[in-house]
Length: 80
Image (cartoon, rainbow, N blue to C red; front, side, top):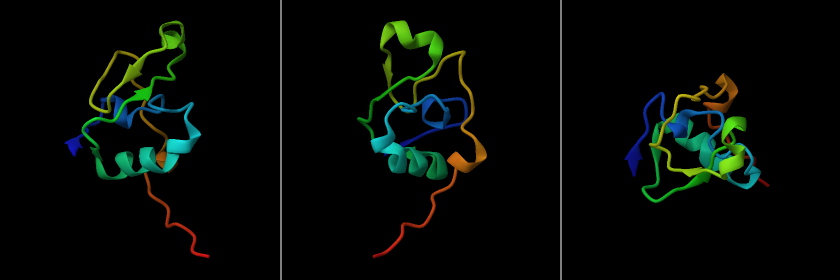
């Protein structure tokens, strides 16, 4: 696991924002500030769309936008 700090892609609202399948993983990263070493997600920053940019949680750029407060918590999973 790698440590993810505020200002890095793993804490950015654009990190993986178009990949709804990974939402639980992204919530976990934002809550714990830890991410798998080899994780890569697409950057959803509109200014980067033309590049099809893929980044790691510890990457960063000037377009950083902090994830909303509700995106920083891990909600308990429902049990069947």
